[in-house]
Length: 106
Image 1 (cartoon, rainbow, N blue to C red):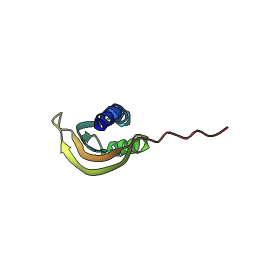
Image 2 (image 1 turned 30 degrees about the vertical axis):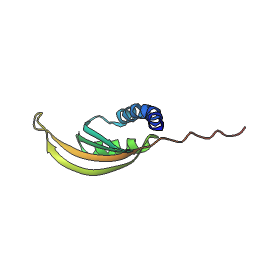
Image 3 (image 1 turned 90 degrees about the vertical axis):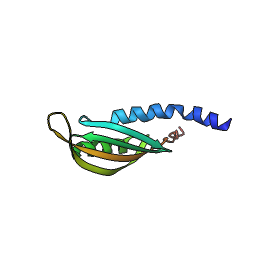
């Protein structure tokens, strides 16, 4: 019974995860694969440049719900659309639940 209650209580977290990722994703970055193990999330994707990956990491770091972005792999990858090159990357970060801010006594 406790496991079912915990699953139901955590159900909104996946919605928050995707919302935060979409808000953090800069133009020129595409996510091709997402996996989660516990609170650790691994993303594989393509970016037009290393600067776009850096921008994505900064935005993840500034989120209240996502933390500790760690870039594991960046390598140049040829794409099929017109011979453009992209950087393929693997990024790992954590999903966190922010603590409620304590209200100050008046």
